[in-house]
Length: 534
Image 1: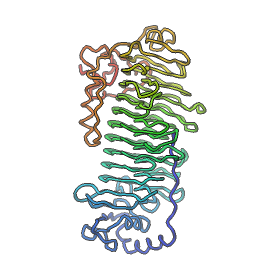
Image 2: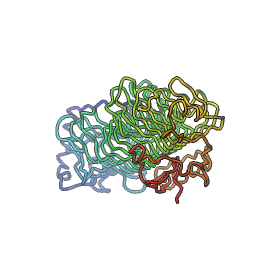
Image 3: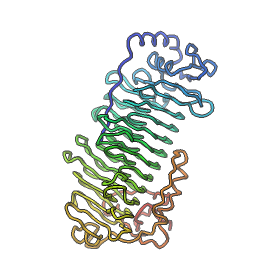
Image 4: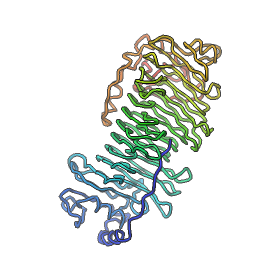
């Protein structure tokens, strides 16, 4: 999967001359050593100075004029009146308007509540773009806003690097984004030869009802997309009811990253995401990623996979990524997919390693097709699947399906499988096995030093199948630990039954479980997301 971006066109010459005339009047306010707060009010006046509430501007068009000439500078703040609605778009060309890591340019609200920014047709509500030539900088903070995008080739918030230079410091916090014909929030760069966007934090964001566009030449309708990023964090965020209009085979996902290094997605919820073709899932680590992590997340009732590794055809190497300590409940509703799904394009040998461990999957029969606890297909190597719980409730839910059978490609070890319909089913290449014992004996999977280490037993979860919806990004800190349905009951056979991944594979599993309990070092660990306190 990848996304596509068409760079903005420059404003026409007349508009530039108008902006320049306005900008000369206010030039004194935007020197690098003198930051200014600009106010925008529904009762304001675009001819006023804009530098206090009593002289506020009135429209987003006035903000746009200043963004072009003389431009906003580090430390400047653009604040919209809370509780009011403003129509238009903000285009920041990052050689003209920019901040710095120490003094970011801020776009937010003032007064009571959040302002709502509404884009016109075909426009992204907030677009920050670094052109290929000239000196560019970022330093941008967007917070406390409702952002409503438009249909067509548009995003709610998009930050894109078209230059060879890195861009530093992006914060998007306490923002709701909806309505986009492309994606709610999108970050990226033109190619791996362009500069990374570094030091990115997205927190308390809700991306919902971004439907995408039928017939678009790439995926559309994702909630939050983090691409071209180095050292990024997405946390306490929610993506739901996105992607309904996507018709591309490389479809949308609620929250995902691609072409990135060291991005962490955590403490987030993704549900009811849809598609008319490919994907439509909850969370994803996609092509060209290295050392990225999805952890402590909750995915449920998505059309596609809850959690996805995907390496598309011409992506750079993908390696060292982790999916761990997450919950998937009734994902893969469109059928013939995995709650956890691993895919590498058959023409790309760059999927080098990926680690899936200590997750809980609960899956019932989908309306059509056969579903899988985990499905791995086409071209990949170095996949380790360990210490997970696969709780399968239905006649058409199978445990594992893998198109590759070499241990160099995939190792399953220390997992717990339970099916309410009889022995779990394993598809291994062209062969099919009924029950863990038959699969392990024939393939060597789920064995360590000639001993079967996988389990085929009821895992003893407290209330498997419960599927609450939270939907509140600011409440997730307290809501996610309430998912006690997927804790282990006292006496569960999974307690102390997991493998030590450090000693077995050199994998560092982190320091805590889904509920915040400490993971023991050098002693037995539990299978699943819950490490009962000792």
